[in-house]
Amino acid sequence: MTRRGVVVAGLVGVLSGLLVVPASAAVPAFAVADGVTQPIHSLADAVRETVWVDIGLDLDADGVGDRVATDIIRPAVAEPVPVIIDASPYYATSGRGNESERKSYDSAGAPVKFPLFYDNYFVPRGYAVALVDFSGSSRSTGCMDTGGRSEVASGRAVIDWLNGRATGYSAAAGGSVVSATWSTGSAAMIGKSWDGSITQGVAATGVEGLRTIVPISAISSWYDWFRSDGVSFNGFGTPTSLASGFENANAKSRCGAVRSEMTAGAPANGDYTAMWQQRDYVRGAANVRAAVFSVNGRADLNVKPVNWGQWLDALPASVPRKLWLSQTGHVDPFDYRRATWVDTLHRWFDRWLLGIQNGIENEPRVSVERAVDQWSDTAAWPPAGTRTQTLYPVAGSTAGVGTLRTTAGAAASSSFTDNGSGTPASYVATPTATSTRRVVYSTGPLTTDLRVAGVSRITVAATPSTSTAHLSAYLVDYGTATVRSTTGEGIRTLTTESCWGEDRPGDDACYRDTAATTTTVDAQVIARGWADLANYASLSTPRTLTPGTRYTMTFRLSTADWTVPAGHRLALVIAGTDSSMTTTPAQLPRVTIALAETSVQLPLLGTVPAARSAAGPPTARIQPDTVPGRLDG
Image 1 (cartoon, rainbow, N blue to C red):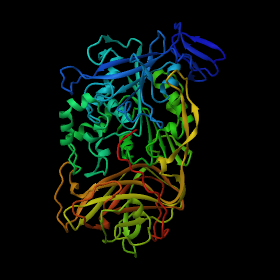
Image 2 (cartoon, rainbow, N blue to C red):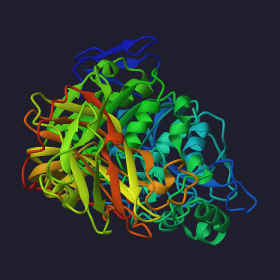
Image 3 (cartoon, rainbow, N blue to C red):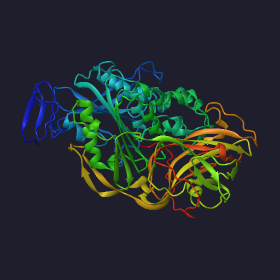
Image 4 (tube, one colour):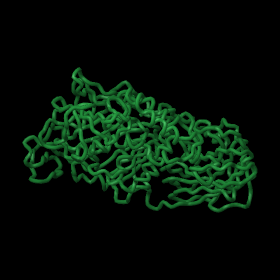
């Protein structure tokens, strides 16, 4: 296992080829060789236990504090160890990971199966792993409140317990007090989807002891999962309906008041309310002290990419951070970049939980999958030299088709009719021809690469023919490329396995390998956004639209880090309903766009060429989107 052992008094050093352990430890909590912690503990001998932690709320109104079940596995050593936490609603329902692993227990109720590889890999290296059932789910008491204070408290309370600030018990009701004397108090939170979202909610409280979070495909504002600038998403339901799929029996019978509060706070018209505000973690981002390793899929239409961009933008400059962005959809990096992921996560936890000076914080912060399985690194996010540039749609000789320029054109207008059934694929497919359902404006062929890096915004001056109107807008890269396909969210599962850590009875460390699914296209959507024109002045208070009256509205497009290659064209497409994503307005309108008063604000690195014509491919192959109906991780 090691070539040579060295004890360093009072500190942990990183010596290539040497094993370094803390002084005075008869059985050390961890040991370092070649810059990383080594597997010196037996997983089979690890301590396994469940502690129910009081979260300081009584949302199920039974007269006692709500408690979250925390299943723990830790090295059998006297020295204290740090803790890796994954809090989730999924452990007894849809499971975790590509293989939908669920927790299991022996006949005495002790935890046996810990989903995912974290316990197999990290416990032998001197970490504890704690898997927490959200309040109201699985073996916890209390209520599920879909990203609200109870679920945030489910994570925060465990960190408080590790630091002696909250009380843990040996049972869900009654029981004896249990203390975390084995913990250093330093914790990481990690998780994908709903799990990852709560890591950000907990970090936004500024809780002491949380050293790092690793949010994977995570929501930073729950409004932006269910809604977008006044319009509701199709098939995403409400916070109440989402929670109903994961509540345990106690929550179903006792949490009616919580469900009513969520239902009242999520009006179907898409308005922003106090309920959504409570679930907006970006508002608390200034409180974050933990290092952030954010991992996301460029094609994720479950947790839309606007979530990770607004979160990173709001973090204090002092917060160490790292960003991975793949071509996949809603996929864990373990299933598209496995070996590099495990190695990077290992070094990240070593640095922030054990204080090992491995220099990972000085390496490039951003890693982006530019082509299938080909990654490009950048020193910082956003990249140096990025600046906001405003581009304007300018009318051409073909109705509804024109150029995208750095200066506004003469006063002109263009119109489309919303028939309620349009999709991004149909809007983008024929960029040089008139369409009754959309308008499109593009640059000339790029002479050099152009990088879009950040959250873009569009300002639209629109005149509807009816009293209701929904808008959608897309940034499009026109040019041929081979990319991950939307089939399987960009991956397929193989029959072979690879193993990451140690096995123990009932909990093996082996997982099926994956490979990319690919396709060749002529157009790709870089960023997209949706809005209800009735919310042009306020997201919380819609206005009744007067047919024939012009309204100006600015709304967000999703976060991107995308390089449009030289020879390709950058285009802006504006349309009505996106039937694959958004609800249909009560009265379908014809919408007229005032071009000179419409613009798109883009965070760009590079130069936009002058566009002499809107010429481009007469037809463009584009993938259909994979749109989920729920948040299953």
